[in-house]
Length: 103
Image 1 (cartoon, rainbow, N blue to C red):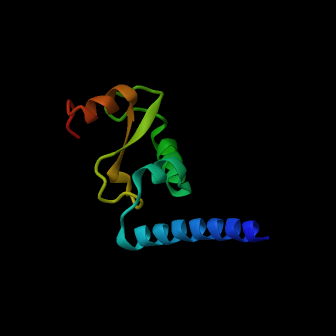
Image 2: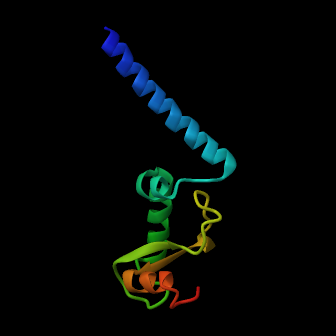
Image 3: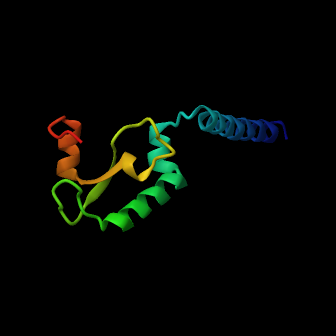
């Protein structure tokens, strides 16, 4: 019984700790990038909508497949507007991050 209570306490503490962390991020406007990109339903929806609008086509070279959604900046991470994002192929995305392209 004691072990069971310890497990419940551990799970509850972890759950509430994560919930409080997410609430704090929402209130302060700061979002954990990896969590947001990998796990958040908000990002998945935003990405899918953007992809539907831009037909999976690179906005730089017009390659018609294999694109990724690029953040022009991270000031609005978690509450991006359409102008904060850009659909780019892997090659162009790499060049952006290597500073060969200015966007």
